[in-house]
Length: 223
Image (tube, rainbow, N blue to C red):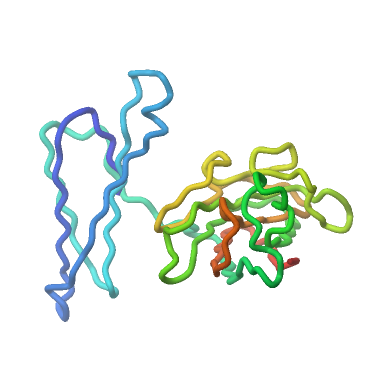
């Protein structure tokens, strides 16, 4: 649910309507888009996104009460809606020398690396998240690069803010959030790209990558 807020107050109530589970516990979290607030213009207003989640499938009703008429209220399709999905599991490993952290530590180019092959112009989204109990405990980044050479190597001086980067999560800033980090939807031209998940500090653990595309792209692990 997406709400544009002009300084008024509002309340949001989510009620399950599933007959078999009328007392289904529902969690509602609301996030504010501070990107709009930091742009230096008072004409911009905060955008609030409310997300309702439950432990199982079920229908629900959303009721919103506001002190003034809303400028904008709409539902948001799930991430990757109407796009092909590729899900991959991976790990940063001490044994495999891939738990190397960000470029501050000098070995960023040794992070796990995935080959993305685009045969025709495609819409593309990628999300990186930690698995299990580790979720939300490590600052993360996922970035898309052009290969340094024909061997599909990553440039040794590569970084989320470097010249080889095509797209990156959160403007290249490492973020620690429960839902992980994502490269927002971009248009990719035909070609070969490298997708690199990384942690801020060297850390060994497992992760998942979700790649959404339309038309579909091919994703395979290189390292």
